[in-house]
Structure formats: structure tokens, C-alpha cells
Image (cartoon, rainbow, N blue to C red; front, side, top):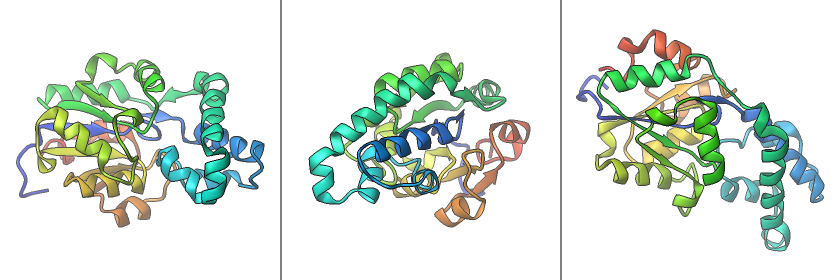
Length: 225
């Protein structure tokens, strides 16, 4: 990062990065799997959170099973999450302060999420950052979710910048892999539950415990240099 100029934009993941929602998503997916006859544990599903449904479902369902009930399973999961778990989602500490600090530095702010469009607006409101985000993408904006680079490529196009002119912030190796494919360096945060080894191995240039540490040490991060 020392050879790069000050970035023009910060691109944030939402689930597990700004919002404490990973376990809730894992519960909804695991319960959906069981409801549709698949013996999948919470731990197995949790390791896949950060991917969109198009990448998560094939991990556990055969091609025949996907054709038979994959779409119904995903729809049931979405409705179950919104009715049962969405009201429990909370932001991590210092999230609005972090984004405000990013904005004060002169960077534009984007959100690159695998969430559905109707969930995305609610997430931004829960995190109290709706007024701080310049560009946001959802799963409906792309053909493939993370770890494919599609979401980041759409964000870069909307921002009209190159990958090297941005910094991504995410909690999973899937964020880092997707961002790297789009030419974007990534800061990893551990609040989503992955150990430090995972984001490092996926290519993160820096790793912090969570948004509050990123805020407290902002001037030392890739967002400010």
C-alpha cells in the first residue's frame, strides 16, 4: 500500500463487517436446509456466510436438488430471516463514526453487499449510515455473488474509478478474494468470526478486530495512506 496514492473510495461489506448478523444468517440458512431435508449443521453453514445464495446452496445441494427445490429453499430462507432474525440485527460499535471519518478524509463511501435489495435499505437504516453512503449494490445488481468479483466491479463502475483507487473492507476471505479479482486491496476485520489467518491468506493488506479499532487507528490504516 505504500506505493499507492490516497484512495478515492472505501467499499464496505455489510454483514459481519458493519452489522453483527453472521450468526443470524447462519441460523436462517441452517433451518432452511433442515426444513428442506438436508442434514446440515450450523457450523457448516456459518463457514459459508459471506457468499450469496448462488454460491452457498451448491455447497450443500446436488444439481438435481438445486433444480428441484433450490429456489424454494432460498425464498423460504429469505422470508424466515426477515420475519425472525432481521429485527435482532445490530451494528457493531463505532460504525457511523468510522464512516463519518472516512467521509471527512475525502473518500467516497460504497457498500458492496450480497443482501437482497429490500434487505439492503433496512441494513443501512439499522447501521445508521444511509446518509453516508454514496453507492450501494445488492445481489440483484450482479450475476454472481462473492467470491466472484461482480459486486465490486459494479461498485467501481458506479464510482467511475479503478480498483487500485479504492480500498475494500470485509470480514470474510470471500470479500478479499472477490476484491482482489477486481484489483482492490482489502482491509480485513475479524468481527464476523473468521480467524486472522483466513483474511490474511485471502490477501488482506491489513487486519483489525473490528470497526471500532479501525476508527481508533484510522490514520495508520490503508484508508488514510
